[in-house]
Length: 306
Ligand SMILES: Cc1ncc(COP(=O)(O)O)c(C=O)c1O
Image (tube, helix red, strand yellow):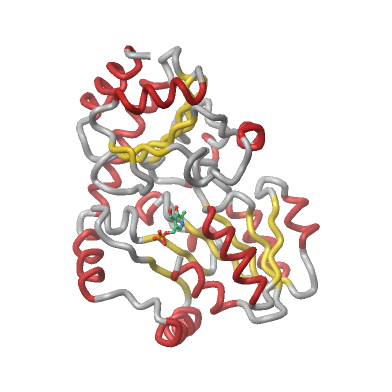
């Protein structure tokens, strides 16, 4: 969140306007709506797939556009090129949070982004033992972020920096393995009748499969599943799992599972969640580095207990 805050403070001033995708991490939403409002930075939220909404949201004071891709927890993959083209025409900075993809699977700078943010807490460190973030961009932006960092204090501590640096030495092999295992688990889940839906951009049925195939180097380690039978079924399934830990973070060596209805989407009513495509019974997995067959066998025994 420090990286997200400073990346924006580096490109925005009081009186400026930011247009954000509405599909963003909950705390990012709170930062934009609550904190930026207090700083005199106006933020509008739009449906990122509606090109016309981006245009309609433009004001004379608009200075930047923010998107997160792939999104949480439906793993929608945004094509940055039309958004980057609009930014170029209007002279806006395009800021992208690409935490879920990692630079192994997607590099937004190659698709017209000006500033990229990663929660290094996740895949970059990869071992769920650090909280850190990264901002990537032109020298001018990074110099401004560094200046703000010294003043506002979001500097990484030496131990965390060392752990992230060590974690990144294995980033490529970890992400390649996450990609393979999550694909295998997603394919297996898509054949099980107990799941009403499986959300993974590597599956041909995913809404953004074609975009994902074109712009990603791998489909990532995040997986969303919807159990038939709602909350009761998902709670029983969760309790029966023996490998996945029930915990909110993602991107580490161990498989984690969380329930968006209790975490990222807790502020919505069950009806609003269903409307957003995240009905109760939805589980989000961060697939770790365990053996794919072991994870599938564990899913199978947990489904058998429903
Ligand atoms: C996409 C995304 N961006 C940013 C963050 C914030 O990261 P941190 O907890 O490292 O501040 C998260 C955390 O879940 C996230 O999922």
